[in-house]
Length: 257
Image 1: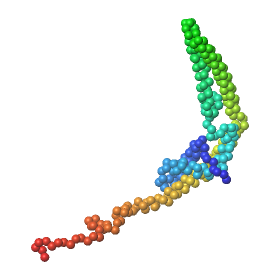
Image 2 (image 1 turned 135 degrees about the vertical axis):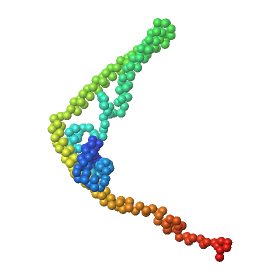
Image 3 (image 1 turned 90 degrees about the vertical axis):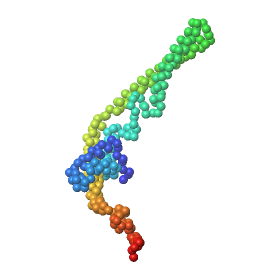
Image 4 (image 1 turned 30 degrees about the horizontal axis):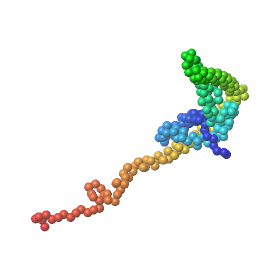
């Protein structure tokens, strides 16, 4: 048998629902009352052991995941997150090209208008004819660039819209995918039942059995209330005494034998 399949994020809610269903069963409720373990703590333990408990229903989960992938067409990788918006935006740099396609015609048109106004203004004023001719030439060149950029942007927008329409048409589910829906539902139900009966319930029963077995030991530990080393030293003999050191002899006072 190969490496166990990791439970997908879209299946975590099904796992949590199955875990809550097992915890709410009369058997687990009775054991919870007997052991004194809080239900929320048992639920946390069950969520933390998802990889361990899900491995018990590995065969059913593989079949369910395969049917779900077939129903989705098997075209999209589960690890690839597509971006929203028109066009193929998964390629790096597509956003920069789109921005340049919009800004280039606008900036070229503004530059053309500025250069043409300055150039013809200098011609009307009959000053600096060489500079005026240069500005007029640059202005007309910028106007040509703006027109070409606008044409390219319109063509690119049209192609993007056509590609998006084709992708939407392919994404429409076909009749075969609709026919697989009952089989997918049965596979999901079989996985949830196997997960609940062979994975989650035995794990919770084991956790509760260990908690019940460790309860008397915990009680004995609480019974020895005075097991601190401060009361177990060899020099401690009781209150009011100084351990094994004998009291000092009394000195005879004046007038005493």
